[in-house]
Length: 379
Length: 133
Image (tube, rainbow over all chains, first blue to last red):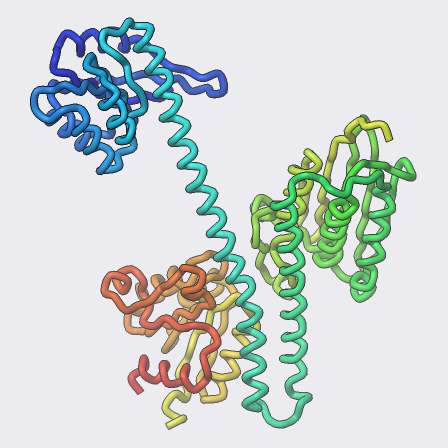
């Protein structure tokens, strides 16, 4: 329950107490919200008093008579507008003229209630203004958060892109100045590190493109009937060169033999590429990757397990954050963009309305499990 | 002139192993002793046991403000040890941490703020200035 502060500005005490009576037990609720709004009422007999109260308190709604003894209602309205207070103003006046209405609207009054009014009229007007105020504040808040998230993402991204550039630039300078002598062999490690950083950067850029595609293109474009076992096999083949270097075996076990789904092949590819490449990267030498595919109860279940380094309980929640990479002795030699799993989560949840979960035991291995509903479209 | 930095100990903390390699190379070449840490935690435990003559901290490591935290901790224990914060974050990301104004010096406990990609001679010069050599 939220309480909105309402200031009643009228020079007639009878009107003020009348409004107070009508609104004291009144509340506004919305079908789309759990929240209920009640009103805390304050009074001012003049424009000057009103301004003093508004300056001091956070007033949410002002019920404002135009004809006041000193400064008039429009002047109060102009003051609120100039100071950019976050409140809504309703004009209550018996001297409503077109001229006044135009002036008040230009100065940001939300609506007019002509005097005399019935309790029902006042309540209806209060409901409108409350809704307006709530939506306005909500929009403002969301815009602000959206911008913040975007800014944070960009600033971290530029850090992630600049780090490899700095590292490579440093190595090139060392080589240019021949800091460890004239023998090219002595620069072997630096050359290799530079190449590795470049390939890391390439991965990051590719992942970025995936993410951008996801964000800018929410509607599925290239939906086809696909066999996810085919795509898993393709992904396995792609990752095999990397697996051979560590003597890791990749197995695919599917039941039934073919599992069909209506989807964009590219998206399913991203899922398998991410899961299998992680399972290889974070594995130990001579390890295994087991990719288990099941279809049951109109659900498709994909689980990919490795026999790798695993991770601690507290690291698991960090996994899906953008640019989050678990940093420790075991992971420091492994390169990654820090975007893969956040992309994966986005695809699973936003495109396929599915879920992703992780189970892990340090030094034993990790299992990622994805469940996506198989929507019943005749294939 | 080169010998003046000889045997001074520098603590370098950076989560980028390539930056550590490069800084170590530059600084050992001029005779400095180098201790390195790749995480904020490692750097903290080094500070507990060892007093360096100078520290160079990367800004963003485990935390986005690891450099500031390390700087604060080091200064608390050894107020006289100069700290350089290095980072790849520049004005173009909208994030700037200069140490020019008194206001900033009050809460950023570092002596100098440098961009990554500094030339070795420049870095040496800055270090000498800080160590008053």
